[in-house]
Image (cartoon, rainbow, N blue to C red; front, side, top):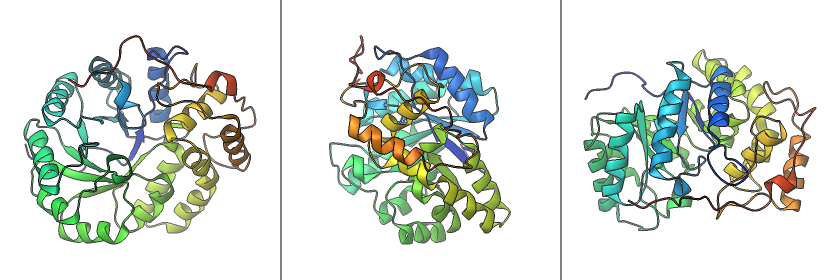
Length: 325
């Protein structure tokens, strides 16, 4: 299928998966949270990605997240399914099922743990992209997968008609510029602290963790860059900096985002699934110290912030474990 334009949106939220205190998916909170981030300015939602705890979700949960996302979005935002698998056959079947469930696009992560060669990475991406008519975002995050998608591999993958974009969590700006110069690929910033620098060199948008807390300032930044207003974008970037630091530097982004959202009263529990655990006392204190510096950020009012370190402590073992097939 030939995809024209941008089928993903520009302000994409790497959605958390709200859970109950015993680690089951809290579906009412999922619906409420998706509606909130869209109302605040997101035009794309990535469900079942890293931030959504994809590695501990079952396939059934992943597909239901797509279905719920589509229902809640009701055309206001694109629903992209992330995660995938480090087993090519499983990834193919999961993305086929996601397409049937209504996903608007897929984000394929580099196979993790296996540490394939570039030839293996190329084959994995091509076979998955061949198996669906949905537009594809490649997810380049060597800090988690152990291997990067090298520049030469990206150029080859750019020739596939369904592969339209890269989520960059590698932070090599010279490579991003080089790929943008030599391909038609869109780039999405996968590092919350680097959203504005990525946009400034030609990226299309972002897929952000901190946007779970508020997507409004990212809408402001993207819209400002679109109209060439760097001053407005820079001012919003500066206001966001302590919030990004709170969410992204002390514990995994999933953990901190849930801790913060629970303290704001937006989700019923800050629970994560093992092996993730809530912040320890000293980590929670660091997060709270950063949040005390947040002022003037739309959608991030911490005047009534009520963190609950006890509720966040530890991690949950769900009743049904995630599957590898």
